[in-house]
Length: 132
Image (cartoon, rainbow, N blue to C red; front, top):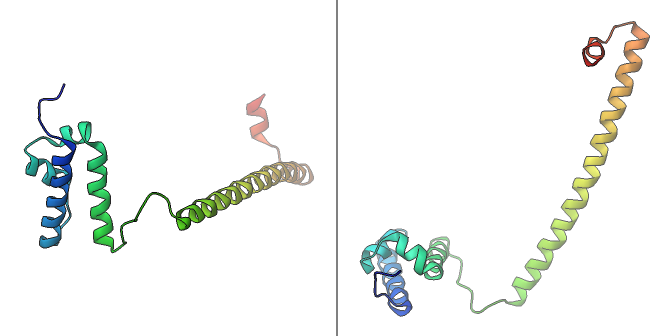
């Protein structure tokens, strides 16, 4: 149940004001500053205005890093980036399976060679007695 009378438009205006104030003071725009500006708690913003809260944090991070804000939903470069990242993920997954197989083979070869070495040198394997 809401105990405030905030609208999405009022929160959007608050986001703009907090971003402008943070830019002028050369500091980070925070959800706490937005909550104080609007006279509500941070929890209220996170609960009832999650998208605007996320937009504030995203736009502030972009402003501080110098990355230009995107101009629409998904651009061709975004689609290309997603496709490239999927290819890289598939390639890394394939490598992971190959390495897993190599480690399995090396582990079996190591166990076999250790047993052969123990037989040739006449060293008793005490770990085998413990397993029995």
